[in-house]
Length: 97
Image (tube, rainbow, N blue to C red; front, side, top):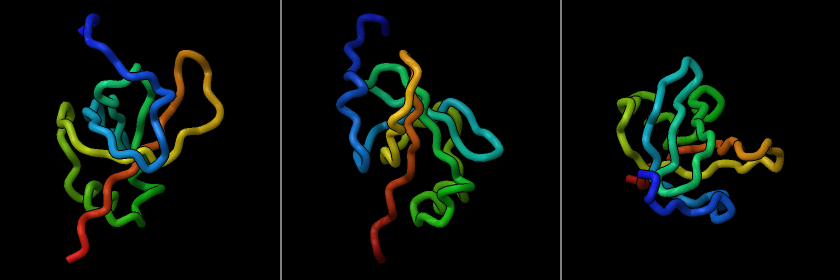
């Protein structure tokens, strides 16, 4: 893995869909690792974002730890402490029926 090339965090944009691996479940939501990017803290607060259609669906069917799913960059806070920033994730909305 050390030789695996990872994209810089500067390439992340709000609204961008990324592949993420779920690393843990928390009482408030999920923690994930963004696949293919430099290490970064990333979470999906299912309590705060539960009114969003995609998040509501995801929180009802929590993905297993180590599952890889598509998530959306919800917010990139302006503050950070090198080399760690926190990416606020959300879920893609399901297609309209």
